[in-house]
Structures are given as C-alpha cells and as structure tokens.
Length: 122
Image 1: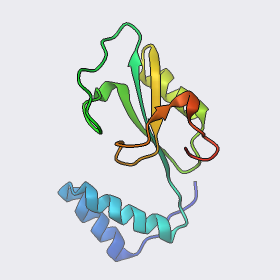
Image 2: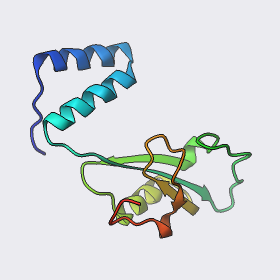
Image 3: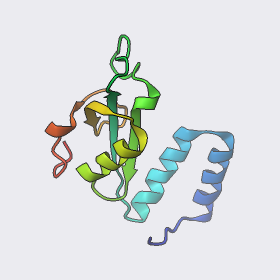
Image 4: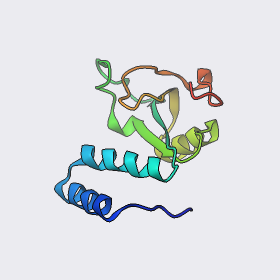
C-alpha cells in the first residue's frame, strides 16, 4: 500500500474531528487528503433478502431496509462482482433479490446485481 502524505494542520484537524465524533468533517478531510494523494475510492451499497426470512416491512426510499441485510463496500479500485459475492458469502445467510447502488446516500439507482454494469459502475 502506498504512503499517504498530509500536512500537520490536516493531521491535527483529522484527529480533532475524529475525537469529537464529527464523521462529516472526517469524511470532508479524507476527501481533501485523498485528492492531494491521488487516491480514488469506489463504493457500492449492497442489500439483499435471505431465503426463508421475512421481507422487510414497509420500505421507504433510503430507509427501512434491515441493517443486517445491508452492506457498504468501499475499495481503492473498481468493485467487481466477485467483491459483491465475497460480501454476500461472509455477511448473508441465503441471499436472494440482491440489489446494489453506487449512490453514496443509498437512495437512488438501485438495480438487481445481475443487471449492474460493473465495468462502467452502473
């Protein structure tokens, strides 16, 4: 893994935000540090239902899906179907109706995993 460089003020701000529990500021600083170091992050939300399980009651846009059937995957390389399969193998019991979205807020762009274009991120 390559080294990451940040200035002393960035380091101090990152530590302060982390200790204060300010995740929005930590994410903002991470974006600045990533850009300065040429780091690109790829992310994908994954959700599924388990065979034999009960479907989630009344799902509303962006909320309501059970946390134990949702996973946020983030890598420093393009995400592949094999990465999603690895998540399902370790996090799900008997997954069906697997859906994914690259939307950071997980509110739009959900598609079935078999329909998702991993080569182009959508």
